[in-house]
Amino acid sequence: MGQVDLDRSVGYALKRAVTTLHGALEAELRGHGLSLPQYACLELLAQRPGLSNAELARGAFVTRQAMHQLLASLLASGLVTSQGTGRARRLQLTAEGQRRLRGPSLAVAAIEERMLAGLSPHQRENLRQDLITCAEALREPERRHA
Amino acid sequence: MGQVDLDRSVGYALKRAVTTLHGALEAELRGHGLSLPQYACLELLAQRPGLSNAELARGAFVTRQAMHQLLASLLASGLVTSQGTGRARRLQLTAEGQRRLRGPSLAVAAIEERMLAGLSPHQRENLRQDLITCAEALREPERRHA
DNA sequence: CCCATGTCAGTATTACTGACATTG
DNA sequence: CCAATGTCAGTAGTACTGACATGG
Image (cartoon, rainbow over all chains, first blue to last red; front, side, top):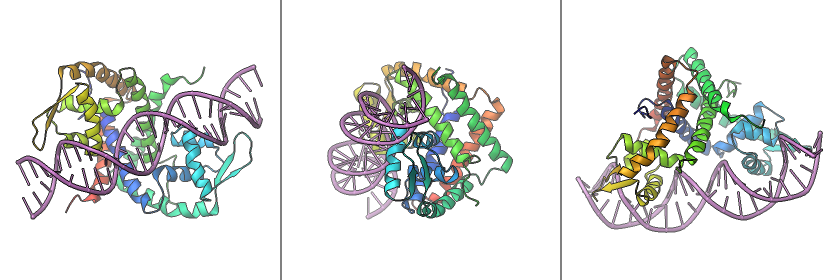
């Protein structure tokens, strides 16, 4: 065989974990009036103020078109502001955006904490590092432009 | 703050890993004429013959309605057969389904192997276990029906 | 000139919720 | 009767591809 064994597959466990996490996050965020993509965008801007749309898209793992339309609603809601009209517009949270993010951000942190409750700090860091190692390993053969 | 720190967040690393994996899988499977959900369904049936639609749905982390419509195309394509008309219909791959799955299954195994190339067998198992621990931890408070 | 970006459309896939008959 | 299932619709949210102007 040598094929995939679901009961031993890291990929399958990965999918299970993410699905469960997404479900928990969406359920929680719904109560805060935010979708998961919206939250991700706001959180990204909170921690990395001044990102452009394209940078934000890369950080959220979506296309810049998808981020563009997501941002449109956030801009319209007054949670985010755009500065300049040049090539890379600086985006950042408004005061209202910061206020609206506070609760959800704490709630999300609590969920992540609950998810990791069974792991020691050492295990958590190992887990995070291994996940990054996995992502890096898959990105290699992409060989972006040139 | 005590809020989410993207650069230290396991959840963020999890999302990055899954997104990258999905991208690699979809790119590969496209060449085999299968979508990722279709592949998942076939692989599940290959390893657990006789599953019902609802069981399949749980195994693939989607609703039974979503699985139902996915199965419709696979049944129409003759890759899967349904037996009985009772409450829990037994589903299984046809000979054609098995044949069509072979290549994709090997390709997916290769991708998973590439993803894990930087990790020792011990690390891989640790990673898988930790992911399952995380998923379990989040599932607790759901408390399904009483 | 070139590449990345911002932006406008259109499309498509995918899954979801709701509803209801059926089965065990 | 009840819980789970199969199934039919309709809906929605999300992202994707294509295209094109702009800017550095």
